[in-house]
Image (cartoon, rainbow, N blue to C red; front, side, top):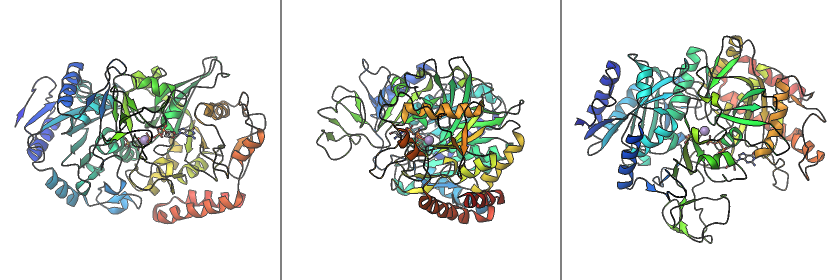
Amino acid sequence: METSNLGSCNTTNPAVTAWVADQARLCEPDQVYWCDGSTAEKDALTAQAVAAGVLIQLNQEKLPGCYYHRSNPNDVARVEQCTFICTEFEEEAGPTNNWAPPGEMYTKLQGLARGSMHGRTMYVIPYLMGPPGSPMTKVGFELTDSIYVVLSMRIMTRMGRVALDHLGDSSDFNRGLHCMLDVNPDRRYICHFPQDNTIISVGSAYGGNALLGKKCFALRIGSYLARRQGWLAEHMLILGLESPTGEKTYVAAAFPSACGKTNFAMLIPPPHYKGWKVWTIGDDIAWMKPGPDGRLYAINPEAGYFGVVPGTNYKSNPNAMNSIQRDTIYTNVALTPDLDVWWEGKDGPPPAECLDWKGQPWTPESKEKAAHPNSRFAAPMTNNPMLAPEASDPNGVPISAIIFGGRRADTMPLVYQAFNWIHGVYIGATMGSETTAAAAGTVGNVRRDPMAMLPFCGYNMGEYFRHWITMRKLIRRPPRIFHVNWFRKSAAGEFLWPGFGENMRVLKWIADRCNGRANADETPLGWVPSGGHFDLGELPGYTNAKFEQVQSIDYPEWRRELLQQDELFMKLYSHLPKELIFQRELLVARL
Ligand code: GTP
Ligand code: SPV
Ligand code: MN
């Protein structure tokens, strides 16, 4: 085994060099390559990936710097059934996680990893989660034998020298090992060892399974560290709403996977909101910590967007479209004869012919979809015309509102506000949402997805609720908490709310509530907009009656809802904070 570029981005950090050497001895790659994050390196690796058939160069006139990738058709989404939290005691992982004893799992995974990189290169990726110089930023290393992972991590994180500089001689870094193996679902394990700040992922090369900085480190390990260190690691977008007078209100929102975070984070206000702007700070993950002024400050640990492609177009999300015109990796979309990309819901008519996400000929008559429903783009956040300059502020941004929301065809109104923090925690904890294509399995079943963290909480969910309750004591000026649902439908199956850019109206009411400007009425669920205090102007055809329908409380639906919440509480019973049981009683009484 040789180290191919000793010296260019190597480090003398003894903890790093010893660990990398250990893992190289285990995996036995032909060579070890240290990534420096430079443009020259990107160009060289991209050329290699193209030569190896891992990437296809797209039409460089239409899409400069863009490349196309197909994953193995058995490997197209996160796999919750193969995802494990390996803590000493099963209680620590809790009933919502798969658990295995660390010793056993290390043995099994090391068996799978042993010698698995023969004939391959082990890439060493040093990366930062968070802006350089921020006290909230953390360092990770991912060792991988996938060049696609390297190039994706280069987009999604701040990678290379900057991470080594941040780390210095410290041994406080996340240790991630990723081995593709033969990409066989029978040998696919995404395992977290929070007590060792370690992740081992084998047998998948897709998304959150393989880009270890994202769900594995920033959320599962992150949430574990956050509880011990007094902060929050959440599956939340962060945006800044700027008023015509320049006042900025920062909002963080938790929606489950494929339920609208990227869209909301990049919202463009309707034309009559003259002078209003929505700036993106992050589209998927927020790390939040109480600041010296008693407010809750948030950073986006990521540096890019790994976004759902289908349905993205210049009408639904122009900022996303503008973000993916250059230097973007597209995975599992369709490929047209002129090396452009296509997907269901793109602007314009479908191509007369193309290759689908599996590489098979496709025409508009085909029954199958051309793009996989969980096809994704990886684009640098600096491509986003509405990227907030504060996205790289080491101090983060002060959060005024936290929003929880699921994908619910019924029961849940468009918007309501929690009475107080603990009621807000209850609303987040009992959240439900329909399953989506972002994870392998059935799509469209309502399940409980507390705070959109069901697949991402790295410890006992009951303790996670307790941590949220305890955090209130550390935040003197807490954000207000809201619940939204963009997806309520009529009996005829039509959306009762136009969504997308029109969600600005909801955002405006929320910001007004935080800034003491809009009135609300009390309902059993929480505070809702008072008549005349919610903007329905310039929305042709949208009547007050329709708004009343989307806001309505249906008592039989709420009876069912409470029973479903009960199932979650029963499952978590041994660690469930009694405050939440009390909140449930209060809600039952109000209803
Ligand atoms: P992850 O990246 O998986 O965490 O997803 P996300 O939460 O960022 O979801 P995203 O913004 O990519 O939206 C997923 C899908 O939800 C899109 O394809 C849209 O079709 C749909 N969607 C987003 N916002 C709205 C909305 O306001 N109304 C309706 N009806 N659909 C929406
Ligand atoms: C999600 O599923 O919530 C995602 C995509 O953001 S992945 O990175 O694959 O987890
Ligand atoms: Mn996500």
